[in-house]
Image (cartoon, rainbow, N blue to C red; front, side):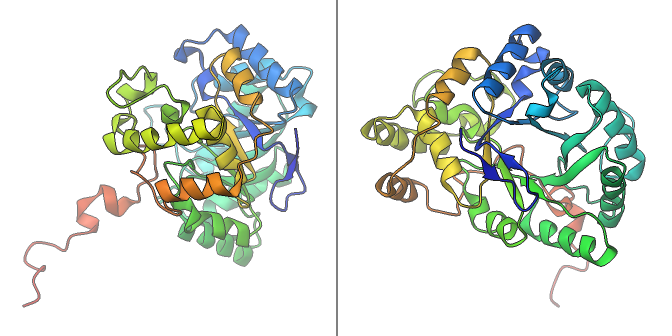
Amino acid sequence: MKYRKLGRTGIEVSPYALGTLMFASQMGNDPDESVRIIHRAIDAGINLIDTADRYADSEDIVGRALKGRRDEVVLATKVGLPMGEGPNRQGGSRHWITTAVESSLRRLGTDHIDIYQLQRPDPDTDLEETLSVLTDLVRAGKVRAIGSSTTPAETIVRAQWVAERAGLQRFRTEQPPYSILNRGIERDVLPTAQEYGMGVLVWGPFGQGLLTGRVRKGGSNDLKRAQFSRHLSDERRIDVVEQLVPLAAEAGLPMTHLAMAFAVAHPGVTAALLGPRTMEHLDDLLAGADVELPDDVLDRIDEIVPPGTDVTRLDQEYKPPALIDATLRRRPAGDRSAA
């Protein structure tokens, strides 16, 4: 496994990183088998493991797997999404983050987190407030570096400015969605991250399962997440998959290898998160670690999905308040006309 610099942190990580959402026991996985998969990934040279407090008992399972092996990995987790019914058990406030980080440390069985990421922007909390508490965690030695996730480019820039102005720790990493089907970050997020020297850990390189070859036009869809996510049944996305299947065959590659090789080929991407559910899934992905896509294959992909475009938007994407609250994009009745 090769290693790449994680932005300007000085940390080196493997281009393949291990995402652990699928290891949550509520996803149907046996915790003991999940531990074995994590060990197999580490033995293969994967040294970046990413989880989140929101992933049910995933942090507990990762903590079990890392007993005696903690120093072999760069451990990343996330905070911010709702963790209960209470109004203050979410977001980027000092009130919540100081509580949430202690819970994550306990579940992970460690005294520090290498990369602590805000899982989504929190428009209701001042950025300086969020960066201030994260800075305190870095100074206390509980966190080594801080990052953002699924964040618009303009918010990334604003966070960098706030950090510089207030003398606070700045976001060192960003974790956006990226795949052949969703290339929108090539237009703004990736160039912005490169400008500020941020490491980029992309999630969803398999298009949430569509780029595994398991879903074909006119066939059945056995993806577990399809019942929750509309984009997994979107005909436009499946039509694109139908164009990619013969391309992968011509290149002599499984769809999974094509998808991962594409994701890590961009110079702004540090690592791509793979989320195997079984040992067989992991072994299949590891077998493609040395795949390097030639220019002609990348050119064909560009023809199918133009650079900087999304086939359709993801259900899990960040939606700013103005897209959720109609009153933020509509003047009051009686004040909407020009005359």
